[in-house]
Amino acid sequence: MLVRRVALLVLLVLGCAHSPPPPPGPRVLAGSAQIQRAGATVELTLRYEVREGSALEISAELRGGGSGSVGAVAVELRPDGFELASPASWTAEVAAGETASNTWKLRPAAEGIARVEVRHGLAGSDLDGITTAAFRVGADAIRLCATADCAGEAP
Image (cartoon, rainbow, N blue to C red; front, top):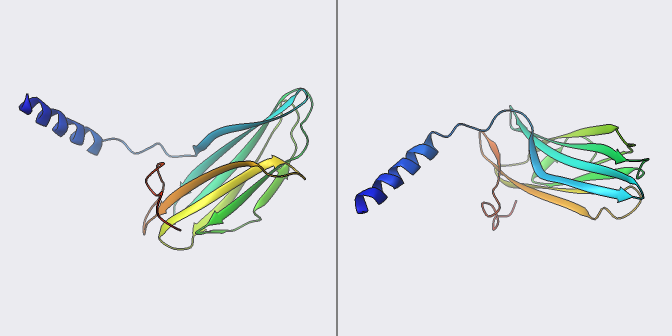
């Protein structure tokens, strides 16, 4: 019985050590959010991609559904530990069947933990939809923190 447990542990360690890296390209940051008004809907999808040279890109895509338009939607980035190279706010309106997207480029201010808060909502009202992500910044890599991985660390 003990031999089986040790063998299982060794296989798990070896299996994890040889796991392939995630595929290149944008990854979904935190699912998607939906805004509705009358018969119209807008789906917001947030993605992130780590670029060469310690750069991080956050992109937002709006996709209209239903009938008509919900009106202009605002998306705002609030970085902590990152320097933002462009305006933090973006506003767009999409009707059913249309899409619009924006990409923000961020650079880490220092090694350690950096966070990005993304707020969204109808333009001109409170941006009460919130997605927060933490990233561990190293000398040669940026990676998304798991839920508890960076919890107690300040940027």
